[in-house]
Structures are given as C-alpha cells and as structure tokens.
Image 1 (cartoon, one colour):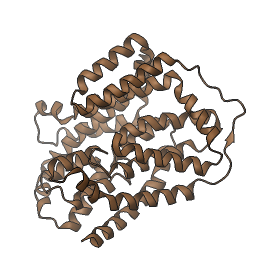
Image 2 (cartoon, rainbow, N blue to C red; image 1 turned 120 degrees about the vertical axis):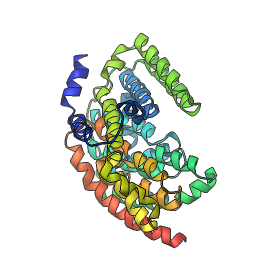
Image 3 (cartoon, helix red, strand yellow; image 1 turned 60 degrees about the horizontal axis):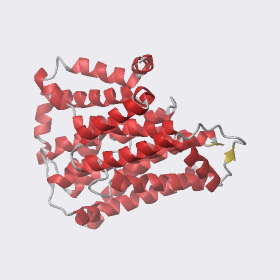
Length: 369
C-alpha cells in the first residue's frame, strides 16, 4: 500500500482538481446529496477493469514478446510510427478510444527495452490517433454514444455523417506522423532485457478481457469488475497493487468539479442562452467547452439545450484535440507514458491539430450543405 500512497502524494493533477473543488464548493448552488450522482460510476468501473486487465497483460510479460517482434518486423522509425498510429485509429473505431490506448500504450512502452525510439512522441501520436479514429462510429467514444442514443440516425447514417471529418483528420495525422518521425533506421539494443513470459497470467488476462468487453455491451460492468478483481486477487495480487489508483481519483474529481462548475449561479443565465445560438456559435462553444471540461461532459451539457446535430457531433469530437482536458483519452495516454515532459510536449502537436481541425471541419461542413 505504500506504493499507492506515494502515487497519491505525488499526483499534482489530483491535487489541483481537489483544490478547484474546494474553491467552488462554497460558490456553487447544490445539495451534498447530489455529489455521488455527479460521478459517472459506469466510466469509473470501466476504467478500473481496464487498468486491472492491462496491468495483468503487462505483468505477464507478453508485451515484451510482442514488442520484440515489432522491433524485428520494422526497420525504420517512420514505418513503425505509421503502423502504430493506424493501429490506434482502427482499434478505437470499434473498441472505443480508451480500450485502444490501454492495449497500445503499454505495448509502446516495452519498445524502449529493445531499441532507442522517441517513445513519448509515439504515445502522443497514439492519443491523437484515437481521437481521430474513434469519431467515425457511434461506439468509438462516449460522446458519440450519447449523440447517437439521443438522435434518430442509424449506424450507417451516423458513420456517413462523420466520415468526411474522420477522413480529413486521419489524412492530416498521417502527414503529420510522416513529418514528425524520420525515416532513419531503428537503433536496436544488442540484447533486450525481457521478463519471463507467464503464460497462465496472460491467458487468464486475455480471457477476462474478452469477458469484460462483452459485459460492457450487456450492461453488466459491475459484475464483470468483481470477477476480474477476484481472479487477480487469487492469481496475482501484485496486479491490484500496481495499477494507477490515483488516475481513478483524478476522474472522480473531474466529474465533481464539472458538476460544481455547472452549478455556479452566475453561469446559469449563460447556459440558458445556449439554445439560441446559431451554428457558428454552437460550433465554437462546443469546442471551447471541451477544452475546459472535456468533450464528454460538454456533450452532456449541450444535449440538454440543443439537438444532436452534425455540427454538435463534429465540434465535440474536434474538441478532443487542443488542451489536455479536451478528451479523457489524452489524460489516460499521458499518464501511462510515465514521462514528466510529455505533458507540455503533447500540446506542441495537439494545439496546432485543434486549430487545423476547427478550420477544416467548418469548411467541410459548409461544403456538405
């Protein structure tokens, strides 16, 4: 448990969110009984299960095996980067953006054992890729699930609505990846230090992963989480101790801070005026709100005032780029990167991506009219 306590004590993001919450509590108009309902417990349970399962796969040593094979397969940094970016985008279209990251980021981290690669930059691009890829389908990310469930579009119609933006962003991201990663040969270590591969732990982790994903679709997340926790408690307690528990508290604090923000009395008149905005105003507001409170809470808020139009769908997905809070996937990826410098380096790529996406997205919307 000292490992968990040290993680909590060093988590500056958690400390900042707690401080903001303490500041807003006396200013917000709410009842204390409302706070538990402010947290999306389904998201918290989903993240908890994914953290456990990913750590189980990592501790099994299989990521080392797969990482070694990738390094042998690819000879140049650019080719490997393009492959990882495409894999992240593709996985996110049907496994959701957070699941794609929980699979690819730990695998990416193992590559440093076998070679000299710009690992942090690669993880940044994977975070950008899941934001771009996940917007294509109704199940790619939480905001799309909300938009699709509130609207009347079929799955093919929703994909057709989002396809031009997805194609534009993926072409942009592939060009940016090509430019950002040189075609130089990968400098491989002569002898990578790989941990032993524990096949039983790997097999049970894969099996539980499948069960957990199916349980998510069947709305049985709580029972699946109990099953995953019980299995690791019996087989590998180190998995439960070594996951990033403070990340879960960060998400809880984010949900509560967003709730308090929306209950500040001086903001209520502004929320009431949202329904009177034109397309341009809604487009800018959805992107701007996403930068501050993340695109999922922004979608929840805006759907109370406006219908799930193509403008709203494009805007909240574009809002995943830019600042760190824009998408919860950004936070997940950068936390897993385990690099203090990755936080500001992320914005060197994400902010230009946001500006380009805003401009290109607006022009595309008008071309489609």
